[in-house]
Length: 299
Image (cartoon, rainbow, N blue to C red):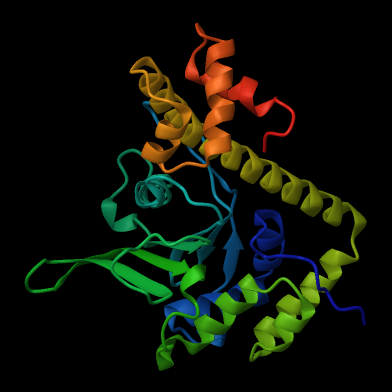
């Protein structure tokens, strides 16, 4: 049987396609919630679209939203690239999941426990090097549980190799490594259980399905385009700051060499920027950056 060796579960489409399979999801949830897989209740995959915010009209879309009988509502989010205020976004989603099925006049006793699982390709928590953190609502001094109705679980993939794995998290560590793996050789090194084996078989089915592979590759292209755009924006922001400083120093009569020395920048780069500023004296720093970028020989 052909092995899957190119598909990344960090692709949101692939992640959803694989993890929405009940047996696979059962094994993954067991590793986080410490419930034996056979004791996890029936899993119901729900619509990923949550109700709109009343104030902003914002539609929230989850990667995977499930209701697990006897456990609660569980939403799982895979996010590869850094996201500003991820903590606030996850809490917003958690609040929606918790309340969206409560009808007007219905007793609060009917609220169902809500669990949010974040799988991140970036480091969100600055106070730990450990790959996994779980959060509950506890009193600051006594640490007594205020309510068991909300849980947040965070898996930070860049931290997988930064510390020794605790015994109780070994299964979860295997799943995190599996999610990170992108080639057959990487997956071969992971200690497997029947649930991860099932996930590998599902990956192989996905790889042999032309329609699903088209969707997977389309998502990969979008991700690559986004990364490229973000890199361009970051570079533009950095260079427009340099251009602004160069303009000010030129106005004070500083030479190209003096400016390069003061800014600790490459003299040829500064000389090139100075020429653009002289050519376009009335242009904004953003316009000068674009002109400088389009100049032959400029990176």
